[in-house]
Image (cartoon, rainbow, N blue to C red):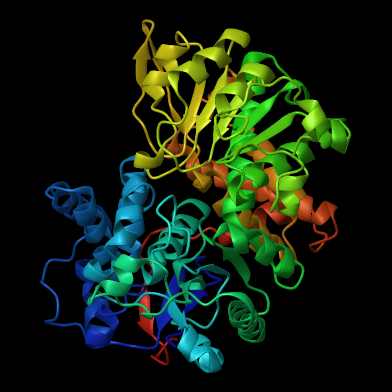
Length: 575
């Protein structure tokens, strides 16, 4: 465990970094390494003379050098590998490069390119990052957690790799997701990179390609299920509580069968949330609030059809219902305005195997008399859209092209400005292409997507296509929870985050604008989300009661910036 301290000089207000290593070991620590930017006096004091080229550079020079090298890469996966290699050598430079080119590089380090990186994980693996907790090592979880790179951790992102984006079971390759998410925590939320910890819970894999692959780096065994799996997760949570009792844990990319129940089981035992359920829902709610402002149709008057009734779909439905109740509707009235459709058609109350979250939205047969059914007896998406005439159509099913021209035109026939959100990612899983949605609606649709798409020129004007990226919410949620010292993460805190996000949407001042702010605004958005979340935590009695001014000061004090600090070795004269 390599520890470090940032020291504040009270006379100058300058911060410096005290490190426990020097010489080549210092250059091998990405959190401490400044490369050619080590000044001469630090090179002498830290045993670096002769280990670096003689020119003392600046971080701006290094960014220019790395930018040029980045643009020489010929594929997005190659660019992803290049950036991850840079992170493993010099974290400060990595984040400064991303900060200076955020819009361009965010899709490379996360969606959609991270999906390919997860698939290729065993081939592109280079250097350890985070912790791998494998089921065969379940008796040694305390030992593994004691091997974490840094003692103090504010945020853990953990996955078992079973439902990576829309790609399914990627086994140990799922580690690309926690690594990517935590990069965004730092990049957008300002969480110190040395206080984050990615974790892969290796419970095996049911992906036959991985089980056959001689180069696969994970545990080559079918996934454990049932009591064995639950005991493994329980042991993990208990170990985290022993080692890091105040940490914020984000559950990420767990399969539908586990995502909701793990959240419900542990949210009151450990400060934790599920970004696929709650983070996605908050971003979508922020988009719907922005759309309501643009269309003049209040949230309480919206009719939503959601294609995909898994953890993401039910999470969106639940968040919308909470918001509608906050705006004055009863729970029954709010639920009646949301329609869920899955691969078996519209959810009906007499369907076998419905989960408790799905049951809240299932319709009784008497509510759909005379509706036309498909050959298999299901009430199809097209029929639901024709009958419900939704104001918003949301896709989280992972099936490309299912928002057909017929369905979209039927929706547009009944709504002046339809809101259409094909949210599945990566790009290959999108329910529709924005250009088609705008063509089929004569340019009237308000569109936001899960993966990045270029703006669309239609009807003589440019339509900005917002990306419903969870990066708009979870970094600010994490920052707010940490700064406030919140003990739990509530649904109301995500509702506060959604409202804060909606205030940044260009539709706030331009009804024809995008439904989300530009990605370049993410750091500013994250700060306001953090303030909203922390304030709500205080209101609910989940955090220490301090003044708004002190709360804002704490948030700003927590925001790490990618700049080089003076470095000195611990124990050196003057330390």
